[in-house]
Image (tube, rainbow, N blue to C red; front, side):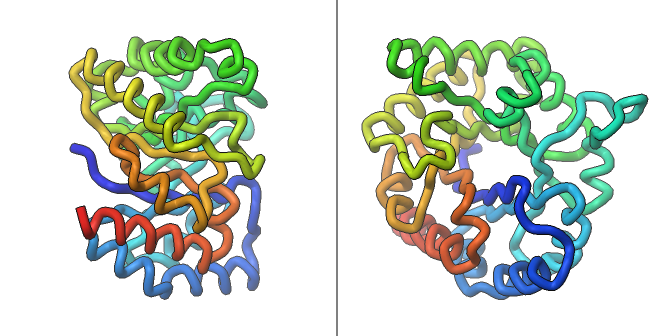
Length: 257
């Protein structure tokens, strides 16, 4: 079932301590959270691993869900520096990002591994947010649709339809992440519609989020696009008022709809 979702990816920002406590308190009690919740919008934040338990405890009883930024494809074993889906769940997370472009780029994760991680996530009690997106070079070469279809179908071939049906997709054009550049409405709609068609060919209909320099200034325009079901927000999610403004744009969009 498609449902509106706004998720904040804190990446390798914040650390346990007073500044994090203050930020989490401001976010937990932000009026935009409650308004979004009443509008049926799922609100998620993805802190660094070391802060997940603290943030989850602080957010307990609020409408904010917690996500991990990554998980390993095995439950346990000799994988130094890794974290399992089960450990994330035990720490208070109920969601997890898999296949983020920074993981694909820096850790050389391929589509098959993303599919394995999605399986591990569902097995561990988490909802995967499966990230896809093209580089500037791929867009310039005119192969965006092929790249996105390959990422989706490559992971789907490993994960299977049932796991995908329990997941969410986030389209993040790599060239827009952290650059201040966002896809135009036409570009975003084109790729989101393509994603839906690829998923429909596999009998899957799930939410598709947009990510890539989402801000309070462009959120309303992005949310008005037919095939966008929400956002995966980066830098703006580190500022409670900015994240709140994005939630307000989501609430206004889907409350009216």
